[in-house]
Length: 440
Image (cartoon, rainbow, N blue to C red; front, side, top):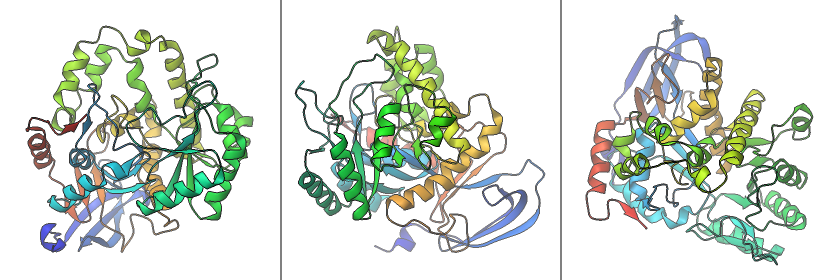
């Protein structure tokens, strides 16, 4: 297939745009040809009302194969890819079960008039064996395979199997599911011995390892065993200066949007789902469902206080990591109520809160920081800045002063302008058949 004909890339020049990731005070003229940046030249001093050019967003914690809908169905991978494009998310880190949907994703990519988001994935995650209390490791409860570890040979098999499926990093499920002091243990947990040889074997083979922890104790144990990348922020307490000193160099993914649906009221859901992009990209039955909610799920399941406290601790710890340059912006999308693309913009607003000063550093971490993490996970760390001459022309334009949850005013992927209205029509067409673009 002739890619140049399939995705026409017209030479283009943007004049007088701000590029805060390069210089917050300067305007630039930016030229793209054949899908790459060919010139990024200073052209004046910024006044403050000019459009901002940023790299496309990178979702650093997604689960493409898990069901995000309230009826426990998963969207067609072709829909998920378009949901990301619609919201300006151009790079996706899938941390659980991508091989299940890879064929459908690739078929959609081949047929798409627009370049798809790039994906990096782990293959299948690794977790603990069933313990004497009958608890399974976290991950077994989801509709995707996991590898269970007891000895080094188990990990060797998992690494080889995942590599054969295209996985380039290792996802380790470690948490026992506790969220706040006194909350119940839900899962078995890898032993310190298994954690240690897992970190060692991954390092010996040059494989980046990301670990899933909830509590400060779990995080510290994993850190002591050699892990430095954490799929969530700590949720059982707010870390102090001494805690951070003991976690030097550790990086954390925010994932507030993945937990918040469990504590939201009906009015909060209606407000959350009322932004532009929801009805255009998500199944309308989700909106119908939340209209009937009488009380938050946290109250229904007896965990409203602990999950509300966990969410507050996670945000405070995420902002502390942001201040240290160690925050990665991700949502845990694929969990119920956390939607691909749409919830990424929600994540930015949840992190920002009422502090306008956080907008620029958050957008930087969600773009430049996320892209570098993406490259690291696919084994290409140390590459060029995503906004540099010769780099792929993948970017968003943002109107100044808009909320972080606002859609980019324009999205360009590999030099191709994305047509949001056409994407919405395509998603509607994929949902039209009896299956509505979903699988149980």
